[in-house]
Length: 347
Image (cartoon, rainbow, N blue to C red; front, side, top):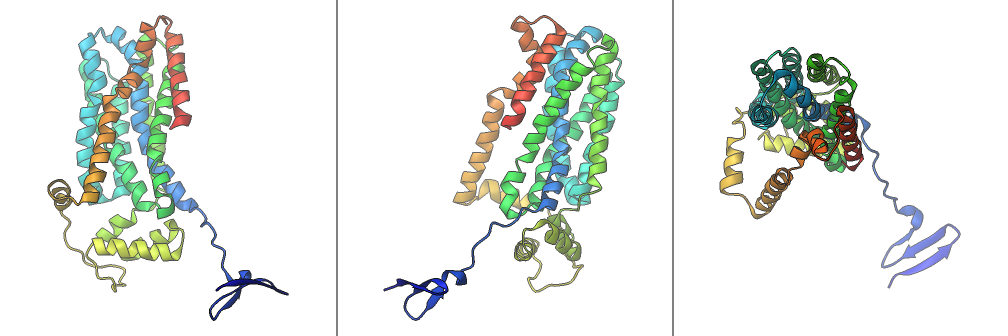
C-alpha cells in the first residue's frame, strides 16, 4: 500500500520499491502557440475576405445599379444569385490548380482573377458587361473559397488546427462588413459612378492578398506530394509546436504519399497523383462507419446553412430594411452596416 511521507526535502510518495518526491514529477506545461503558423493561417484566410466583400458590396450597389441601368427584378436576382454557380466552377478548377502549382500560388491566382473581375465590374457600362465581370469575379471567389481552408488545415499544428480553420469564416464576415462600409462610403458619389467605385474597390483587397502571399511558405503536404522533402521539413519545423510533432506530421504525410519511412533524401521521386479520384470513390461508394458519420454531418451542416436563407438576408439587407419602412438610402446602408458589425463578433 502506498503512503505519503514527509522529509526534509518535501513530500515523498513511496510504494512498492520506489520512493519519489513531488519534485521528481515533471509538470506538464501547455505548449506555446506557434505564432508563425497563426500568421500563415491569417494571411491565407485573407482570401476569404474576397467572398465576403463581394456579397456585402453587391447588397448595396444593386440599389444604384437597378436605377442606373434600368434593369428588371429578374435581372437583379440573376445578377445577385448567379455568384454561387460561378463559385462552384471556380472551386472545382481551383482543386486541380492547387495540385498542379501549389496552394500558395493558387491564392495568387485567386487574387489575380478577383482583381480582373472587380475592375471589369467597376468599368461596366451596361448589364452584359457587368455580368462578364460578375462571372470573372465569381471564379476568383470560388478559388479563394476552396484554397483558404485547405492551406490553413495543411499548415496548422494539431493543437490549433480546429481554431485556425475557423479563420476563413471570420474573414468572410470581415469582408462582408468592409463591403457594407464601402457602400456607405461611396454612396455620396454620383449615382452612375458610385456603384462602379463600390464594385471596383474590391481590386484593392486582392492586391493586399497577393502581397501577403509573399510572406507565406508553401504547404508542407503539397511539397511532400511533389517529392520536395527537404523544403517540407523546414516548413514543418516552423509550423509545428514541437520537433516531435514535426517529425510525426512528416511521417504521416510520407505514408500518404507512399514514400518509405526511412527515406531521408531532400528530393525524391513520387508516383503520379490522381487528383483524388480514388479518394472520392472510396468516400462515396465504400466509406467506413466513422467517415460516413463525418460525411453526413458535413453535408448536413452546409445544406442547412444555405437552407435557412441566411445568405439571402445578407444579400438583400438594404431591400429588407426598405420593406420595413426605411426610405432613406443612407439609413438603409447604415442599418445594413449595423448588421455587419453585430455579425462580426459572433463569428
